[in-house]
Length: 195
Image (cartoon, rainbow, N blue to C red; front, side, top):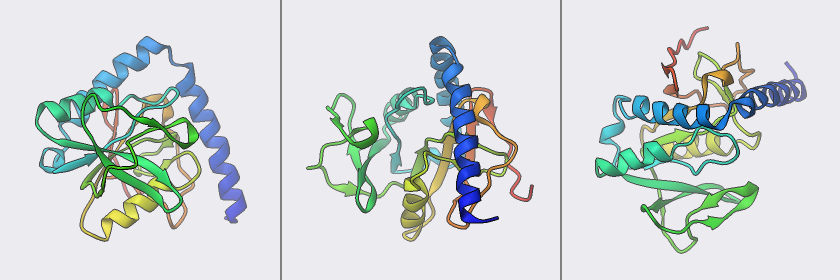
């Protein structure tokens, strides 16, 4: 498949999945985010991660803040990403600390905090399939971050989304990194790498 065709396919799939996500009413999203937090907290290996990379939600995304609160409650540290010209940089965030406005409408940690490398990542996404492939927002930041962090050792990746974001098949490209786990409000999505 030609690269342009793959990009166009991904853009259409992204748009459709985001429209389904946007159509969920706020209470469904709120309840779904709480359920996602409870399920994600039980992912094997997450409790052992010294530093968990998470994200601050935008638009109608599954909200990781209930999960972040539960990570804090069991004394785990959390880092949030900042978009830089070189990709995502993660900086530790503590409950109550002020975030600053970043690119793309993101809320990010302050620039004066040191960059750290999480050993687990809670990953946002627009669409996903049952192979663990995801469609992000089209800039490849998380694929690059996962690749970079993996050079220092294994990185546990957990995608969170609402079940309406599932698609039949993501047109994966060589640089796309499949996720280790996908969690929706309904629980764990069973992943089959050989579909």
